[in-house]
Length: 463
Ligand code: ARG
Ligand code: ZN
Image (cartoon, rainbow, N blue to C red):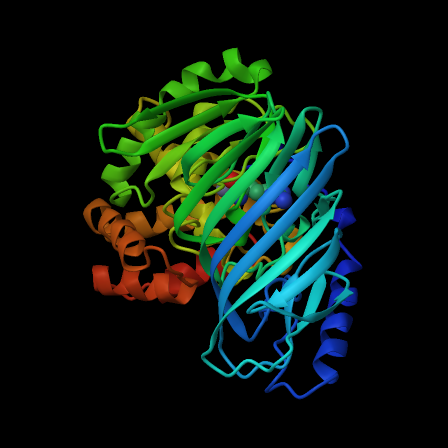
């Protein structure tokens, strides 16, 4: 969720034509049947992800020196070829690759923009499981997104704020960086003693020797690469288990401790409230990373443990944790469908307010609907934001939530909440598209909802 509503749309540009040209160039160099493609086919981010294989597991061993800013990495990917591959790509931006092996044999590799192109010693047969090891190092550099914001490995004064939506995962590990591909993760992260490295999932252990501390984390449920984190800083840590058996790990920058204490205390009750509404919490771990990263300007629903650039307010905590169901457990297949993440998480904020003595969702809707036709809210439709520059804009968040409110009014509360729970359970740990959501809503309600969604998701201008 954005802390400010400022849209930096001028910054967009140029990266898209360049990326498309690179994609076309790559596609022309060899027969498509044996060479994995340079992108996953997402028009908003044509080079994100890759074709020809899926990754089932990442084993990342990282060591970060907070004074020199140097990262040493070893990534071991367990993958499966979806077609015969003489060559395939991984996404990696910056950093230096020193060695690549495929199933233990040295592989040739080259770099081209954000593509790490790997040629295994032997072609991989279609359906074949394989293991890729990449050794790399260097100073990670954040990427600038089409809307002018930054993501990836973002340095802070005491470490790094690591958040990869939509394309920053490639700034710190090589992979198949598109939400179409979900995988389990192991992280082994070594940092100077006194710093904490917080990743996703459950903390398996930590030990200190020779002035350095190693943290081992395991994310067992499937995760999209953009939701991975390895945030490093000086943190106060708090751990406990909820009544539902969820392991909570909070890491808080001391400068944000007093400002965040009251809100963080509410996490178990927020998760319980969301579980009642959306169905069981999807992960075995939860928590918060409250960093002090004034340059970032947003929070992210990093899986099982959202990250905040400063002490969050309660509504932001509700938003990021609602994403655990909508966005993290149920993932996008294309960035164009981003309202399925942001519209849902925003509507969770409206519902929370309604059920906790604040404004009703209707009142929030009415206040937005009162905005003039010239307002940014109506600049483009949420179901088709038009480009990667618009995916975090007001129409996606607020008008996306308005679309859900319209659905709720059309089908009634009982059916509406049944639809939300069915969406979370039927697509749990997988993916969902807008078309599938519309179909589900029609099935559960028995209504023809085509024109409602057409109006609220796709119609240009104020409905
Ligand atoms: N998904 C995040 C949220 O709404 C926002 C991420 C923004 N990322 C960015 N690069 N601007 O909770
Ligand atoms: Zn969000």
